[in-house]
Amino acid sequence: MEEEAASLFGRCSSLCGSGARISAALCPRRASMDFLPYPFTSADRLTVRHFRKSLPKPLRADFDASVEAVMMAERSFSTDQVTQGHLIIGACVVSAHRIWMRHHLDPESAKAKVAVPMRSLWKRSLRIMMRMLSFFSKDEFEALRRYTKERGARAFGPSFKIEYLETDEGFVSEVHRCGYSSFLMRHDATLLLDLFCEWDRIWIDALSRKVSFHRPPTQAHGGRTCRFEFRRGS
Image (cartoon, rainbow, N blue to C red; front, side, top):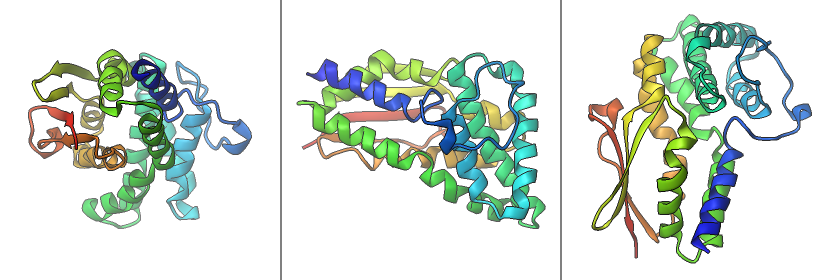
């Protein structure tokens, strides 16, 4: 049962990534991304649309142009479909931040504006995914451990370096290289890195009491790595 639940968890997680098969009719295309090395998927369009809608209408055309320019500059780093999906999220965050600063906001105030859509990005899908993991597995902790060990690193692509470790109390997923951090450094926007850490709160807060979770300071807050520690809960 735990193996089936882990498999289901993997299939559900793909709905939140760049491979989601959502009707393109629901995701009107604003920007031309024909230059991308991999398909610009419906999920990618939903991501762009999500951030676009957070901006005042007069600023949206500039946002579209900025996302295109960032992704054009990132073509050589788009080594696979998964990585490209992460880059598109990064492009949306950086572009929205730049647009707000052009709208006469200081960097921190612009960051606060971008934090609003970031906190809700794929929130419903991620919460459903976590609920399904809990509902369909007799042992939620074991299903999560199996998924993290067998598929966790692959789900993020080669721009991330993630190590899986067994401990006496449970298991650890430790990020030694963060693809978002590398992306933001290339665009002089490391100020925004902690927004990606806060995005994790969506699934962290959805964990049931069967899983005890701890995360020491991440790279965005001075940590050498990003360490996700899982133990059995009550």
